[in-house]
Amino acid sequence: MAEKRILIVEDEPAIAEVLEYNLAKEGYEVSIDYRGDTALEAIRQNPPDLVILDLMLPGLDGLELTRFLKRDARTSQIPLLMLTAKSEEVDRIVGLELGADDYITKPFSPREVVLRVKAVLRRGTGTEEQQELLEIGDIRLDVAGHRLFLSEDEIPLTATEFRLLRILLERRNRVQTRESLLTDVWRYSEDVDSRTVDTHIRRLRRKLGPEAERIETVVGVGYRLRG
Image 1: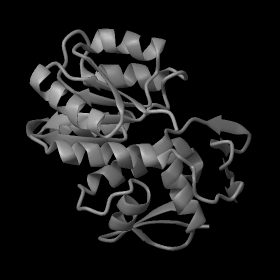
Image 2: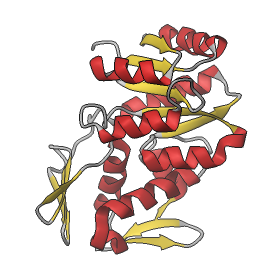
Image 3: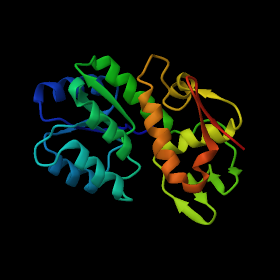
Image 4: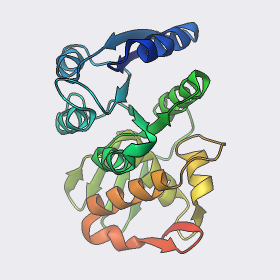
């Protein structure tokens, strides 16, 4: 299997180099960019398998870079892992709303970053056995083709949104706790901020339009897709 390519976009050389060292030890091909604007051009020219992205960047900040990447069909499916400071909670939520897959709060353990990277990359492998088509109401999820249709309209999804919707469809009418979704969608067993789940559910509901009401909130527990 070819090495996975990771781009680190971080303007603090010490942090970037620690991440590069630890990811390279795991067999990843790693490159670094210190500016948001030059990183955008590099990603468009040669899309990596994953981007680790700081929010505070010269040239183009992390949120703007995320917006550009998610609006471009050539780059919209690239997983994004944000690096944020504890004081950047609002920006972190905005980043998740824009389509980032996950975030890590500074200061962090390099080992934690490696584990998060592995988890994000595993989500898109598609190695598990899959049903070809999942349908309910006007929702039609083409699993093999990785496409969502509402009636006849195709709706773009990020890789994380796709996996989340797929699991909710496969387990329709059964309550899924936030903890189980973090394990099965994000592939985390450790305690992760449940707002990651809530933010992705909110974004998924917006994309489902009139079918959004099928995703029910079970207060204090999690979510259920009614069908």
